[in-house]
Image 1: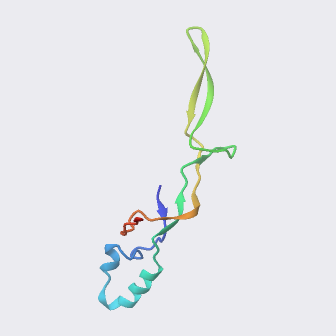
Image 2: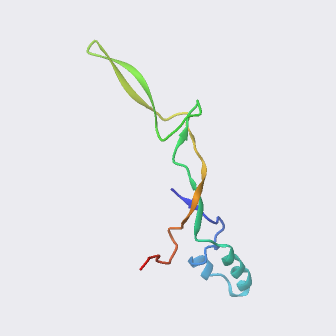
Image 3: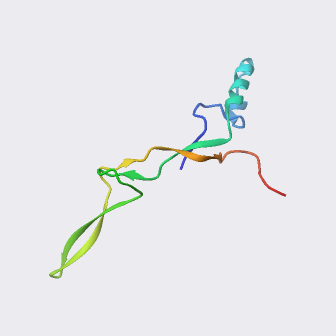
Length: 106
């Protein structure tokens, strides 16, 4: 799941894009670096809504199948008419994966 902290390119202070800024725009790139944060506040949801508005990772429907003259119930996975959950706001901010500092407690 991808998280988002800042969308603009070059806002991450430790990325190579921020270090490759032109020397004439040093003040502008410095102000951009102050806006960047190592925290993630949102993520993309992994669940889906169906036509009824139910929320789940997967949806199944029960179908009746005749096999050797006997009725059997079988589950069929539904993959059509599903809408993604969208962007979810996290309760507690998380650190970005590319954060270059090792955090440990001694």
